[in-house]
Length: 236
Length: 347
Image 1: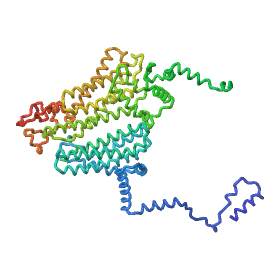
Image 2: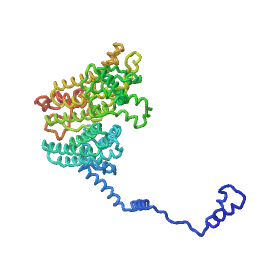
Image 3: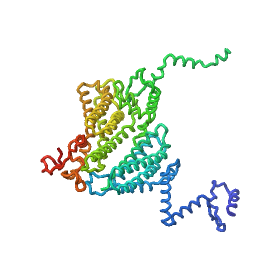
Image 4: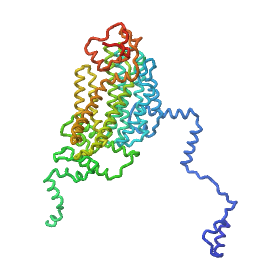
């Protein structure tokens, strides 16, 4: 810096030179090291967080995701007006539920496969394309919910129907008869109503008020078709 | 207070006087005359529609506004959002209009009012496809109760067949009709053809009456089923014909008659097809397993196909099981007849 202080003085006495011409003469002394750390508190904290999830054990990662999925299951089973499903959406839960439902709905291929129940791929396609269609419908009607949030809600609200499927399979282990059927019918109807109530609690607020029924009706149709598949399931 | 009198706004008085003189002045707005040629030029009488004058005005105004804005491209989302710009009350009103066609009221002019939507046609077709599959299944369940030898199976592929048929009908037939009407456009002077979306709307909403009809078909009384079928078909085709009549009226008689009869015929084919869906689906799916109905008690060993290839399908099943007498009785298996490929023998 000593040289820098001198050079302007030199320039004053010398002949007029173009502006800033002497800047290249300025050199930084080797004696004064310029180094240090620039830390902003927030950023350093997130950097620590990032590196910690890279270094954590696999069990921790899996348990964290499973806990998130489990928390959302609880929100579906006891629907309150909360934003958790919408804020931290994820598609793990819907995938688990859809695969479970499709596996349970599959029957052995003893029967002619044209006359049988839905195959795994059919259930999968119905659930996912149904959810996509309903989401597109609600967005086209002017809803302000994002695509994946809506998929997340619709997928998680299949949980009551999956529980109904489990109960139906257990009930079908008993002897067949009208009582058997009435029990299954009752369980499926109750779970169907629960699914609709849960998804409406999350989805209805995102629609303009004079179109709520238009947006909810496809959800009703979707869960009705899934309930029908569950109710007509007969293992052979 | 003369100064205060002078400060009174005289325009309000004039306006109220004007409005008091002619209460319908608001409806014959300038926008009626300024409708662009793309829209159907409607001669709205002063009697018009009573409760919905504001809607009509707004509809015309928004139609004008839409004309002025640049149209979004078909790859943008907002292009498709225009077709879903309906409220619940509007959809219900359109459904009611299709259920009860009245000779003076054209569906397109009266209910659509230049705002066709795609919500109605799409979801009515989806509902009809699923309801067809579900009632087909239910019929089988009810038939199995009377005769345990029928093997019950969910027959899920019926949903696919029904869905494809209905969607093809509801989209391809309006396309053909629209193309035909445009081709004959030169003959017409007074009224332009309907736009493609309006045609799709008319067809879509006219399919709504089939939904309760299919549900009521579960009642296993044959003459009641034919009655319901005829009634629904009449309502639906009346709606279609009344909508198409003003457009076709100015054409030559031959063309008009041919067009209307084609429309009615296709609609009737759809209605009959939904009645016979089980037979078509099981035939298309492949041969049913050979049935040995010599002993109704043998349900575990043999699983006969659900309708056994009977040409009338579900209708045949219902007609058979009308009444208490079970038609299937033990009989020794016969040699298959030359024309019979399904291996199933019924009286």
